[in-house]
Image 1 (cartoon, rainbow, N blue to C red):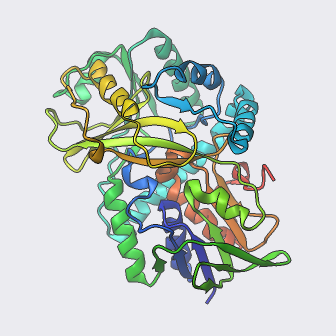
Image 2: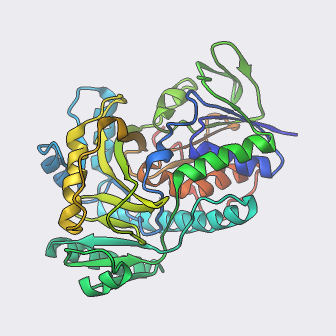
Image 3: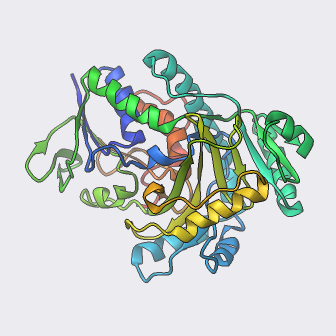
Amino acid sequence: MSKAIIIGGGVIGLFSAYYLHKSGWEVDILEQGDLTDNCSHGNAGMVTPSHFVPLASPGMIEQGIRWMFDSKSPFYVKPSLNKDLIGWGLKFMKSATKKHVDRSAGGLRDISLYSSKLYHEFEKDSGLNFDLTDNGILMLFKSQKVEEEERHMIEQATNLGLDAQYLTPEETRKLQPEIELDILGAVHYHCDSHMSPNKLMKGLVKYLEDAGVRIHRHTEVTRINHDGGKISSVSTRDKDFTGDKYLVAGGSWSPGIAKLAGLSIPLMPGKGYSFMVNNPVKKMTVPSILCEARVAITPMNGGIRFGGTMEIGKINDRVNMNRVRGIVESVPKYFPEFKLAVPDERDVWFGFRPCSPDGLPYIGVTKKYDNLAIATGHAMIGLGLAPATGKIIADSFNEQKPAIEAGLFDPDRYN
């Protein structure tokens, strides 16, 4: 039996373990934490084929510069002389073109639709209940400028074969009749889904451990050993782990891990925040994204999760409550009845989304080592793309052709 060593116990590493184990592999997961604070636990829980435009897109640089002067803005790059940030920023600017967006759209659509299909198969095969629901998502907007942008997005989505529908305010209210809306209109992406990420993560960890996958918590990799064009083992503080194939799936910590093998994976952590309202004044059935505010709102476990912001900078444990206030203050502009209180800092979750400079994930086996793969850089859509990413990795390790073309996500594109 072949053996795989996975570095990283987030949702990408867990689904890679799931598909490898399912195809007959022995699997060890090495996780530096305790699996309770991964980025996927606190996100919006959305599976979004509608998100076919990468973060690096036209207009983001100009918009980002304007947002940098607003402490409550949805996107912020902390100015720094850090060479990694400077290098990332230069690559981001080079990628933020229409040509890049057009080239990426089909690939992002394909991997998202594939992942959605795999989620439904996984739900059936595993027997886990993580509240997977196919109500789509609503993109809500208040300004004519954003309405024009969203109409253009509908045209693009339709051309890509996605099910998207423009809604008037009255049509939107019929989908959620209990909730008062103050909007100019909405787009309903019927192709999208949502779930409870906490239930998914907890259930998936138990499922894997019950199946025999070994998860080593509080186990930080300190060295990657290689012999020629192969990885021979990885070392932690007190033990070496040897396998036939190795996977770096460490989320925002992946660049440091890859560096141990002499690889460059341009990546910056994008800190996001979320909080739960467990007894909302009104029940919500369809998740929503507030377009101008870049805030995601998802019904979850009988409550509602509110999340947003993207802070590009170094990993740190500080909670920027101004960012949280920005989320809180944006909600009543769209939902007048939702008069949210600013949550206590202890009730605010934060996590670090791994952001590549071109907005595309890194997925695949490296050229430098034929038994080492990378799976990271998914930014805001890591949870949604996890099954597809894990299946692509498993297919690669099994020397089988993946069901979709994954060349766009080449892990060596910056090496």
